[in-house]
Picture 1 (cartoon, rainbow, N blue to C red):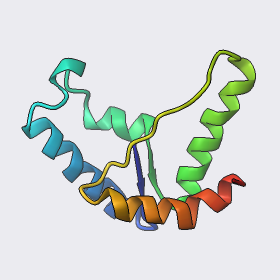
Picture 2: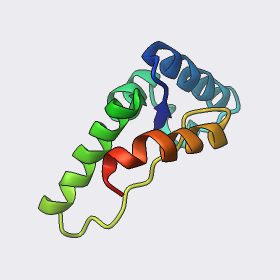
Picture 3: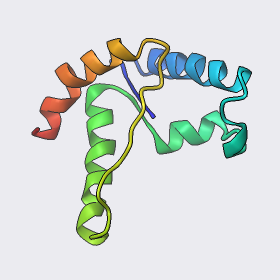
Picture 4: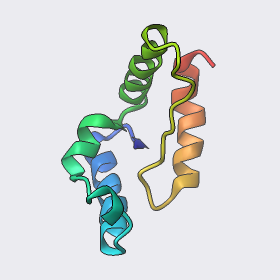
Length: 97
């Protein structure tokens, strides 16, 4: 999960609202309703630099796992278009793509 915001507290808050909307609708029941803390630990939530650092770390796995073809990231936000715009404007340039 990704949420880009220069204010980490606001990024966590927005991701939490998204998480709660999914839990309330039973969306993650098949996955055993993963804990929000697990999202925070495994996801990329915070400043553009923090998000880029997490993504770069995941991309580095490709060197040691040749069968790895792609990663799927989702925007943890009730406004994914805003997150996509932030990602493209603020994170993508840091990734060198």
